[in-house]
Length: 425
Image 1 (tube, rainbow, N blue to C red):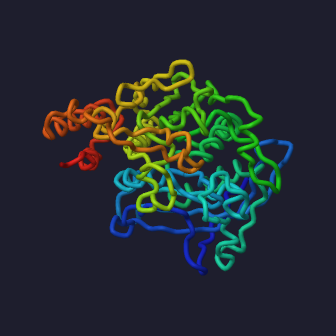
Image 2: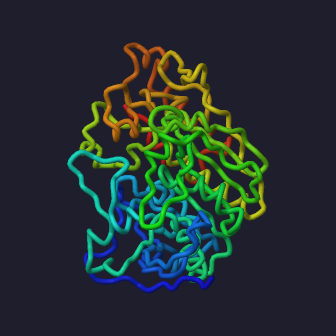
Image 3: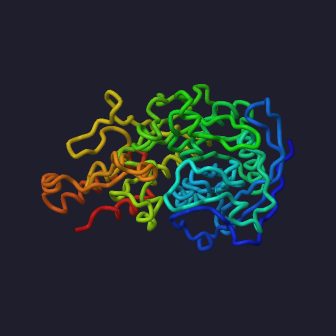
């Protein structure tokens, strides 16, 4: 199958890609940002649907005046809000830039291009696909339906890898995009065998449907009718499944699909982390209207470590470290007397707590707030019992930071940023 063509997009109002938090200054880092219309032919995940032509968009960010690693990280853009978003770029951008990994965000799904129903909506916000938002820029796009989304993702990755000269190509995706990557691993990768590794980030219990021509994937219907679906156990490339505490139960409900590590699989579960958090939403937290402050966990630092290990592993280096699972008894997370979950990957905010970070937003939270977890104060008297002095707290926080780095779940380069999140005074 010929490699898709990439034609620069221009005009209209510029690149449309939902992000609540600003990323690194790419120009200052010697990076470029380009957007292309990618046109080609994609095979359907279900062979009964054959192949179809497509024209979608891809955003490419890469080093041009800075050293390049030769790795291309391809993100399946998330359409749960009704518009394309790049949650993994937000979490991983600092690691991508400092390592020199090129990044491509692919509009793989129908909803991101043609508009459709939001899986998760924020009250008062109406988000649409690219063609509706900016027809002057994106009017020429043409998506044939999510039966071909998996093929589109592969073919656009091929085109960008050729354009950037990448020697290693990794696939990443968070939330709905992790459901689709699960399906990709189970049904598409055994035939295509294109990607060199996968970071499946915050998936739920089922896999996404294979899709239908002319229609978007109905993930909610698939979850209602589906059954727990682990990642296949005969993997030939490294895969890290990264789950937040908030992903195990509730709306995401990964627990029924939880599986043990394998020769090419690592499952990481992050204590005190929510499906989404303050790092993602930034100054727009108040816009969500949540009853409690959203989760202030350290999910981002673990995600960066996961990418570092995946890249090393895919290059033939050591496998990613194994991680203890979160403790679950009778279908419920086990918590200590402070309310902090036991087990899992530990970060300083859970092992040297100044408050209680949780993936659970409580019974009265809206759907969107449920995904963002919450942060509550320590119980009365708990801080004084734990930390008789502020110096004792800071010492414990530093010790917890260094323990997470030594275990491989926080990167040494992020030490200063993690330490800066300690409470001062």
